[in-house]
Length: 210
Image 1 (cartoon, rainbow, N blue to C red):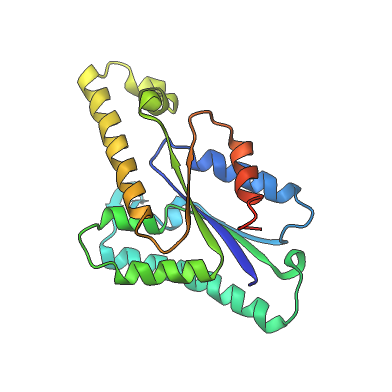
Image 2: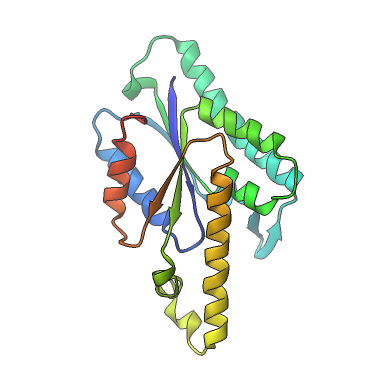
């Protein structure tokens, strides 16, 4: 196999962007790592998109088309590496990171037949992908959602804050449930402590991934 990759899933405020940066740092400092790396943030794959300043929710068909196109890109790169023949990880291997991908789809469209997203997950697994689901404990949800922009929460009522916390935990539970249905192997990491570099090391040095 010429490829391996990480798919970062989780609700907003769980730390996907912080872990993505830590993974890139780890990979850059590993002398034996792949020379080629593809990193696609959530704007290249999520269901809800900011299009020309307006929030647009993709339909199920549109989102499947989007995910298929991203996987096809990775498959094409892998096919090229295979065509070139014998290889070393550093010279011809490909490492990729995707943010908000198949679990984002499953949660957004839970009542539809999952045959197509299951097919995408199988292809991701064939490309050496592993999913990392980032979660936070109920006790720190309020602290975490306020940490990104404290000014945004000034003047908000207790009820509004409680509603936001409840929605986050419900979305997190939905991600966890759908991770159990996915064909892509998933590791759940609690990010309460924000030890991003340690999480990255744990993921990248896992014997099943290396």
